[in-house]
Amino acid sequence: MVTTEVGDTFEVRDLSLAEEGKNLIEWAELHMPVLRKIRERFIKEKPLQDVRVGCCLHITKETAVLGQTLKAGGAKVFLCASNPLSTTDEVAAALAEEDGIHVYAWKFMDTEGYYRSISNVIKNEPHISVDDGADLVGILHKMKRGEQAPEVDIVKKVLGERIDWIDNVWAGAEETTTGVIRLRAMAADGAMLYPILATNDTPTKWDYDNYIGTGQSTIDGVLRATADLLAGKVFVVAGYGRCGRGIAMRAKGMGARRVIIVEVKPHKVLTAALEGMDVMPIKEAAKVGDIFVTATGCKNVIAREHMELMKDGAVLANSGHFNVEIEIPALEEIAVEKKEIRPLVNQYTLKDGRRIFLLADGRLVNLAAAEGHPSEVMDMSFSDQALAVEWICKNKDDLKNRGGVVIDIPKEIDNQVAQLKCEVMGLKYDLLTQEQDKYLKSWDEGT
Ligand code: RBV
Image (cartoon, rainbow, N blue to C red; front, side):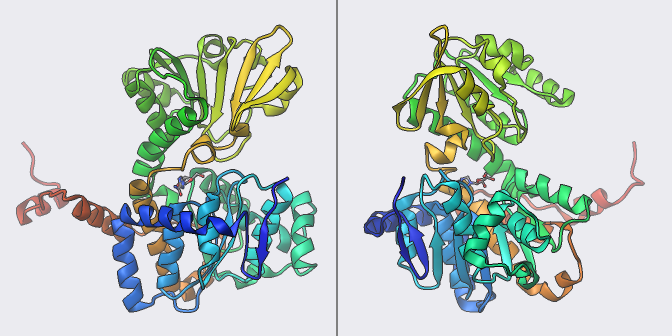
């Protein structure tokens, strides 16, 4: 059991870690120049004056810089964790000391603590929700619908029987693919009660965060957890979306002997093959892989029947949002012994003596065993988020009439973030001439 320190505006692991946390945040800030520029403007313009923003995000040094940016714009910020293993305790301690920011997050929180923290955010009646994986949105909806569920029981212990917390919310923003998929399903069902911006689905987010960020941070997590040599390994990646593609590219770059992609979509199979990856069904990959990483957003991608085929010493990790991609209950069942052989590495011994190593309990290995995506990448994702929150404030009256829809990030926001990032990186580019611009808009000039 992990103990926590509790105050009126926080629940964190240990306040004495705050100094270390401040250094981590300073380091992130140094590497997030676009978000810093937005913050400077926010300080002058105060576009979020007195707006309450509830954020269910990974509580990292980068998220701290986002929280401080929103605060600089005049917002009151309420933070809780979007995963039980992704909090940086030092950062949470530093945030707990800041006025205007509430924080409820610690690493290795249990389910009770996880939903208690979400409840503490809801208790402050946010106008805007910022989610990573849609858990905050999910609870707000479950409360309103009067659903019976174990997590709702936990929430009721903090919030009582009141169910209408969602009525205060103007709109939201969603950080990740899994969350957006859920929101689209909710909207299609007619179940969604307020509009949410799909921050994930914009080029300055998913082309860098999902691809480049996940690629590096996942390899980082696997290596920090295992200290394995990647050179010479057979590395299996399940899922060839932006995340899987990034992971495969970096595994190759670090010297993996063979990178095998497991996919269900024919066009992704083709992309993988033409980008120089091996492709095969999981049943075949299971027999030859040394390291397996899932990045599919789906469940039981590595299931019992596959684990039974694996070599002694196989390493399993997940980089998708939820811990369902590897069938952990099956692993628990087929193992005769389990021990934590290193921090965040569980060794499962099977009947015949083979060992399978599961990293970070199958939770996002890049955040649980490393520090999540590098700050330079989060600079773009969280600039998109800060501008999405500002956009919601500007458009809140219109948004109230939109109902439960998923909204694309306005192109101007994406362009602005891309331009600023080029500027801070010193990347120069050409502009279309008038003639070229006219040509692109016409259809009559042929051979
Ligand atoms: N992610 N956040 C971090 N350093 O704060 N790293 C990764 C960080 C987010 C990322 O945007 C991705 O969409 C999400 O985590 C997956 O849950």
